Image 1: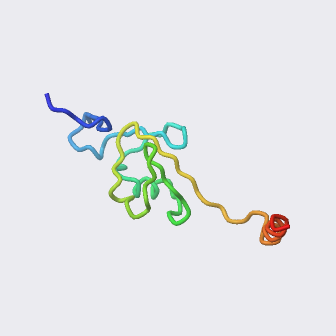
Image 2: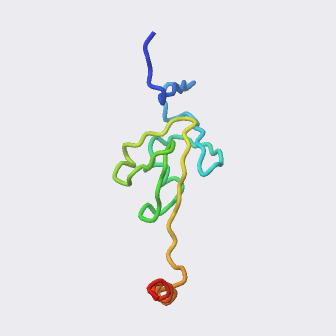
Image 3: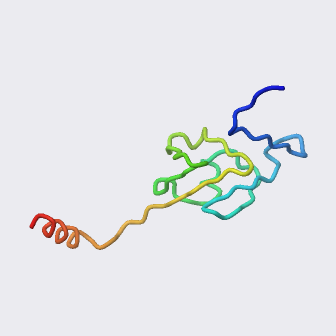
Length: 103
């Protein structure tokens, strides 16, 4: 019997081509089913997210944007996807807070 890495999963597809199989992914704690999604880049496109404003964690590891095409997805993978939102309290609050800290 061959030894397999602990992170490796066997996904048996009932049809000859793996892209035709439904895959269950857990995204931000919610289970979702996808057809023909093979990597993080395809998932981001499928979810219609702007890639320049999000960060992706795959199975407790950050996936750099430059590696999204090579980050393969497997049935049962867990992803956390967060997007950055601009705004906040503005420069005036930051300036007042900094001045208070310097006193």
